[in-house]
Amino acid sequence: MRKLSDEIEALIFEGGLEAGARLPSERKLAVDFGVSRSRLREAIQQLVSRGILTARQGGGTFVAAPAPSAASPLAGSPLDKALSPLSSLARMEPGYWQDVMEIRKSLDGDTAYCAALRAGDEDRARLTAAFERLIKAEGADEVTQARADAAFHMAVAEASHNAVLRQVMAGLFDLLQHSISASLEKLYRLPRTAHALEDQHRLIFEAIMEGRADDARNAALRHLDFVEDSLRLIEDAAARERRSVRALSRAAIQKEARS
Image 1 (tube, rainbow, N blue to C red):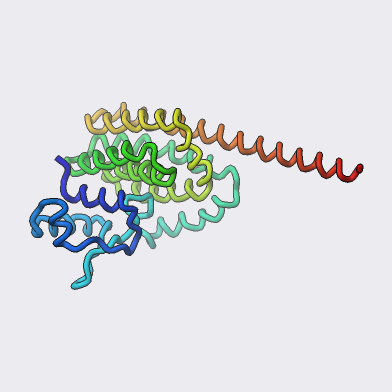
Image 2: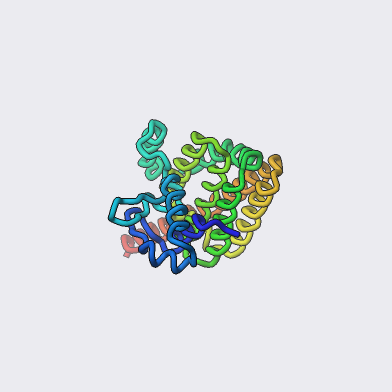
């Protein structure tokens, strides 16, 4: 059975609540979830301690950061400050995403490996909730699917019990989104690709849940290889389209000049 805190987190995600959004009143939430207000407060406090919610004295409970998301959990930290300047470079440099993927290949495998070894009951519950949201998001708009994908990987990172690794992973997701947001959206529009991604995430999820560390690492690496290959094909197709448009434009200009 899923924990109440996971149910509330799912409510935040599925409702598309952004940072600063206020949750419904305790009375309404207690009725909606069919629990006592004391149990509800305990679940909310768990989310507050994880930085997902913030409680204001006499003012209600608010979303502290987009949740679930790939946003940095330690904004303002030295590591966050080191990664933030790279965002502008990611937007301007067309091939920058490949550097990001190269680093992710170095980290994702170890993240999944550590998660399989260290995940406790709460981590498994959180990972299960993230995986269920990921499956539910299939067929939704590209933004929703991308958020669910990032949330799943961040749940894996959190289960690794390595705070620095989690922070770096969060920063890499941000950089990847900055550099190829359009390509990432196209990735989720392809039904064949979406089904393959679901299968790959399932293999990662099952290996971690069953404590198969080597299998978790291998599944994570195969997943990234697939994503990288798919993004290259999308980028190549876009480049060909741009070249075709430029060629047609030049031909039209030349024809007009001759007439």
